[in-house]
Length: 104
Image 1 (tube, rainbow, N blue to C red):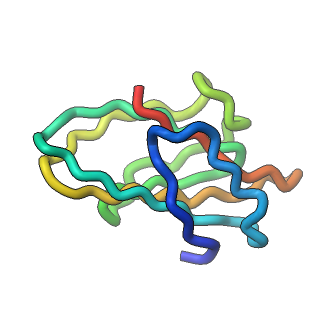
Image 2 (cartoon, rainbow, N blue to C red; image 1 turned 135 degrees about the vertical axis):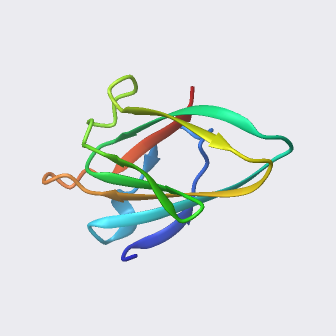
């Protein structure tokens, strides 16, 4: 996908993508689970965003102003082993680009 690729963590606070130099930026996070788990996350982007887990589209999130509690909540069953979270975040018309991805 187009954009800048950077590392991000679902445990991190706000991910600011304004310095990407492109309308959309791509962030990835690798994690390894010791055992299978059902996890709940919130994706709260400033502008439109897409989350892929292990290369499959899992969430297409509408702009939420990057406000926690106003984002898209979702549950995902994850098997034991490695997983890759990839967020493609695009700027708003005003140029704000960033998101929260939080485990709930």
